Image (cartoon, rainbow, N blue to C red; front, side, top):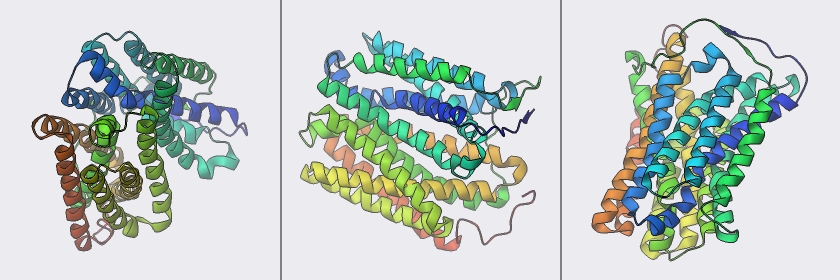
Length: 405
């Protein structure tokens, strides 16, 4: 196996790969503003809404563990096509939904799609970048990823609020976007020479002893940030309706979009700050975001919730960038993919497990109190990470570099 250098100075394969990445990620957040409509139609509780959301994260984790190296063995294009097929199947499940089984199936397929495409599309965008765009290719891949996640909620909320058939039209639009992406991917040049090696081998999740303190600090920061993303992409409509009294689905989609847009901004800022300053800054900003969100829940203030979303999203972006960079830079070269996969698995667990806890707690004490408990826990975790950092410099930079770097 090996990658084939792509030297043609053509922009269209690069643009198609980025668009396919966006189209796949759009489908993963389409249901977010619609959960309240599904709750009223099917009569399930906010807790069940968080469970439906969490199934998505479990699908992502399964795909990361089982198929993380699949595109290295069979090529980028087949894996991207498979991700688009799974995305289309997810949309069809929601189109045909008349109960919880279809919703669970749709979210599982969506998670598998995201798990397949995230790594594959990132490297495909980078590999297909023409020479004049290579320096910005990684940034384009990040924008495609987070932009697609944010646009999915914004698109669904806007169409559900202002267009007919709120639980159907958005998935028809999604199928059209996916079909266009699939047609484009079929024409992409392949950048991988395939081998006969078995592509199905579960990823290991072991972390080298010499970098465990670095990994723990990075994982703590990443866990807090991804838990925040999970909260906004699962229970935002419930918070807006039950606490803020806001029924506009476009507003719900816009709030979720603001979190992902702010996360992207935080990552761009982190590139300027560097790991040493970005990680503590991210933790501190995340604590401030949690304070704003808690204030919005206590005062039933929509503007304060939006402010909290932007501040927390920025903190998440700062800490996420720093955590990934620290782990990749301090991992032994031969085990870098293994350690990075372990970090991402923990982050996707952070998306699912805490929000299920919020859903369960909301049944007992109400949505407002559950949200306040959640913000307190995330703020505490970010604060503990912040206090831990002085002992480790820029996440372990002061320790000896692992062998094999």
